[in-house]
Length: 167
Image 1 (cartoon, rainbow, N blue to C red):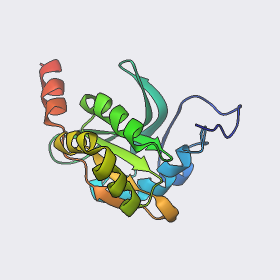
Image 2 (image 1 turned 90 degrees about the vertical axis):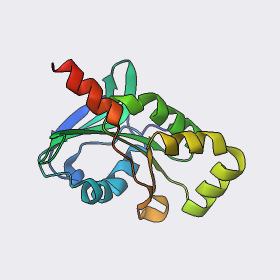
Image 3 (image 1 turned 180 degrees about the horizontal axis):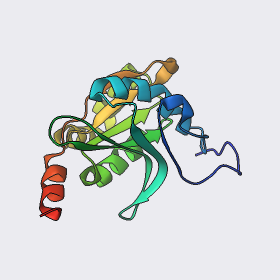
Image 4 (image 1 turned 135 degrees about the vertical axis):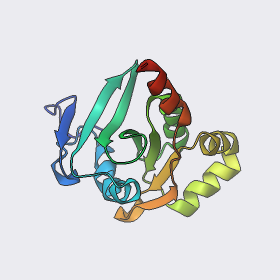
């Protein structure tokens, strides 16, 4: 990971639109700004949401953690986003380890979709199958345009865990 600036803050939390989500600590943080408008549409994330960058949560550092309230069940929603320039195996591994921490989990990567799938199918089919089985989403932002390759599915274990904790 290449740092943009040494003076940037470790963690930043804000509400509002993607353009005001704070400064970038790493170059890969810029990938979030490309992917977030797509994620807002797909998951109907309202204007009142909370974005936390480089959040430490239950022993893991999460690149981006988003929370919001909305109609429907469950009313409280959360999303983890792992950002990587090109290390898809590391990104998927991190997403798999953090999957239980949120309702939705995504990997955002700066690789062209055709190259990404060829790489995964040819050399890393096992981790791709595990990610699909666990409902992890995948977004390519190569060329500046986000492409939703896999939509994250609801993490039903997260729903059950939170329900039981609140009893």
